[in-house]
Amino acid sequence: MDCANHRLSHATLRLRIFRQIYTSNTGSRFLSRSISTSPAQLSQAHDEASFPTPPAPSSSTKDYIPLSQSLPQSPVITHPRSGIKKVHKPRSEPEDIAELKKNPWAAALASPVRFCVTTGTRLPRRLMGVYGLIKRPDTNHSYMLPLDLLRDSIQHRPAESNNESESPTPESETSADTDAAPSGNVPPLIPRGRQYSPSLHMVTLRPLMEAVTPHLSGKGKRSGVSKLIPYRWKAPVGPLNGNDLRDCVWRPDMADYLLRQMRKDIVKRLLEKDQDIVWKALDIDEYSDSALGAALGGMGPVEHEANGAILLFGPKPEHEAESGPVPTTVFHPRTQTTIPVFDLSVLLSANELETLRASPNSHLESEALFFRPNDGRENTNLMLYLWKLQRYVAENA
Image 1 (cartoon, rainbow, N blue to C red):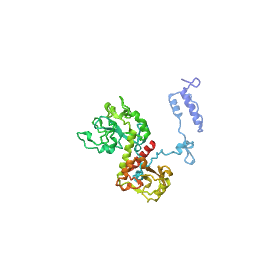
Image 2: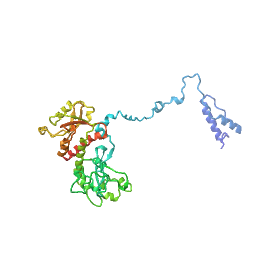
Image 3: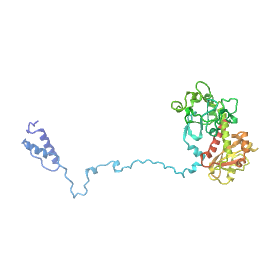
Image 4: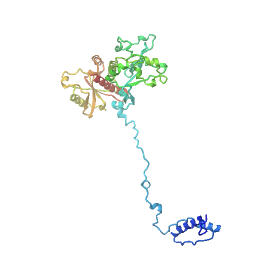
């Protein structure tokens, strides 16, 4: 399209105007207007109207700052931060945890966390009881019993014979109700020929056992124990089929049965003189905080004695009734820590105390003993099982 007054195209006029505006800042004069519209002049005008390169700063100007650097910059550019580093806790070395392994309470709290099938709580494994299915050789019933308390009876079972009824049974198991009293010397249930013995974890408290026993020991189309068995045990995922689930039985006297088994386990562990457990006799006049603290202070120093405990065998002194109940903990003046006190005259029965007294072990002759387990799971189990029995008896009282 041509301009009506100047006979120039619109593009040529626009280029000339842009050139006049841009070159006016550099001090050049305005270009004279050309009337020629030849193609050669239009091409020359187009080249002249292209944007020229800005003049370079003079070499003599030392204070020249480029425009890009004169503008304010973001602190992200002027003060850059290094990448975010996640601080990892250093891994413990064997010498760092060597002392904790000798502490039974630290070893128990460091055990893997497991789920309690009755209360739904999650606790360290060594603070709970381990239960599994144990099958009687003369019946098809499978009893849910504490595997940790019957471990020796299950492992050291008599040799198999044609007459399975000849296998010996503990005295506590001989009762009128033979169906509710399984033998302790029987193998664990391994259904379908699989070498797999599943186990459950439950909190060992007497009120809990008394509350769940009526629901679990009931008989019907579906046994009460099957409510505790998880899905991974059942077919087709697990080894238990429908017949196995119907044959599962919960003892109606589970609360008393656990108490008997816990006491037997404690007596067995005390009669085994372990060289790794330190035993020290204490000379006390009464079962009070002051007397026990003074006896600990007069005892010779023992390595890692803060991890120990006190065993009281009884019988209690005559003036003990005036001093009040026996404390469950006592303050150790040398280590400035609190250690537990276990009164076996309360935890065990009279017959079991007589069994301990009649033993030839020299470390069971004193009325009060200080013992400290050494490194190892079996050594610390004595302390933990005494603590479990004390809780069980205290709840019963």
